[in-house]
Length: 370
Image (tube, rainbow, N blue to C red; front, top):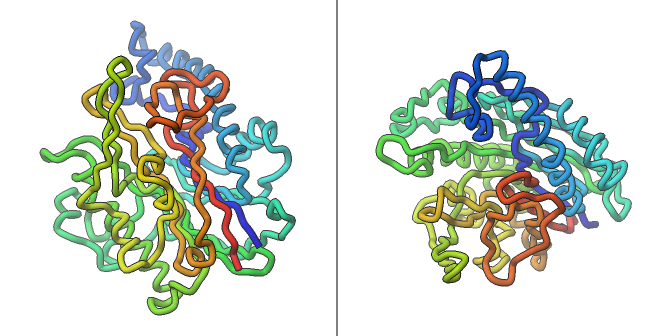
């Protein structure tokens, strides 16, 4: 009995306006920075007009990317709330896939901007097998102290022992696929952020993501037992904001681009992949073809990397030895530099930088649950 599951960071699926850019230029959209705005009232008026004008094209592209996953269950990141998700499905996704994702789940996590993880699922798989929701458990409340994960490195970043580990949540959802149990852990780890204390953003924020990964592993081992977890049906889906490899891009469009794979000495992913605890299914793809995000700060800093993951237990990995995930890149903006042979047809109205489906690419895979 097969199930198709996908993960996708939909990038700020919001149903409210953010006016903080009036007082904090770092939050101000670049288009508004071109104009002399006389006061806060005018700024709010223009920001609303800007956001509304950009959103329609963006969400059409987001819906096209989701439709391309053909997923029975979707794990989403950066969702404002259920109302935003329902409005998006009704106004946009329904036009692409018709009636489908009736069951939607989210929790109130710890993100300061209010963006949460969410899961949408159909009532049955593409092949007609019932998908039964069993239960949902939030772990947003877990603290460093509770799991014994507070370290000097975390303290140096200003994280106290009593504070919560997950920057959003580790949302645990139990389902049955034609009666067979499956547990999904939907996550969105801390972003890399800006350079801090003389360190690149990724290095400076690494202790937080490592703690999040340790907490996810602890939750799974507590649930199934250290000696039995490998034999159970579970998966971890989401945006880890971390990578084990990068594809460093050199050159330019005139002289030609170069693509070099660089392994990372440290990654929060190593916590979960150590000891064959689980498998990163995307690593079944060729090294140059695993990326889900294009990062650039200009020609001097460009790379492709995998930030979006479907990690599965050894039981699922073994049962699906031939399963290779799909990565949907048609919603990427035109500025994204593709390695040779990977170019795809962009969705209509995709822009050089925006609109786009998201800065991330959806990852989807079909698995035999047992």
